[in-house]
Length: 203
Image (cartoon, rainbow, N blue to C red; front, side, top):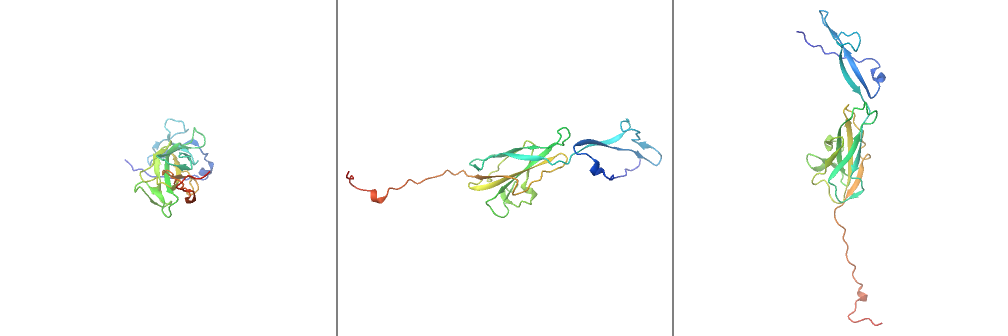
C-alpha cells in the first residue's frame, strides 16, 4: 500500500474569475506508477468522478442591536438583536455566530467588559471582550455590569459559515445609553423667614 502524496495548486486568475455566492466543484484524478487511475473521468458527471463541492462567499455579514434601543434606561437585563448574511439567499453561507462586547465610556483606560473576570478591565484590542451568541442573538447582562449613572456602548459583530467577519469600528459603530436606576429626589422649599409670624396678619 502506497502513501498519500499531499498536493496543492493555485490556478492563475482563479480568484478573479470565480463568482461570489455560487456553488462549485473541484474535480481530481490520480495515477500511480503502475498506470492505475483514481477518478479517471472523461466528463464531470461520470460516475467515477472524484470531487469536492464548495460554496464561494466573500460577502461580510451584518448585525443590529435591537435591545436596548433607548438613550436612557433604568433596567437592562439582556442585550439582543438580529443578524443577516446579505446577498442571494440561495447561495449565502448563512450566519455562524454573533459576538457581543460592552464598553463603559465614562471610565478611562481599559474600559471593556471581561466576560470571564466580570469587570471592566480590558482594552478594545483584546479579543476577550467578545462573547459568542447565535444568529438570533441575545445575551444576559452580568451581575455588576450595569452601574447607575454610567454610560455604555454595545457592539455586535456577525460571522458567517464561510469565515467572513463583520467589520466593526470600535468607538463609532455602536449603541450608546446611560443607565440610571436611582430615583430622583426633591427638597420641600422652606418658607421665607420674613413671612413667619406668631400672630395673624392684619388685613
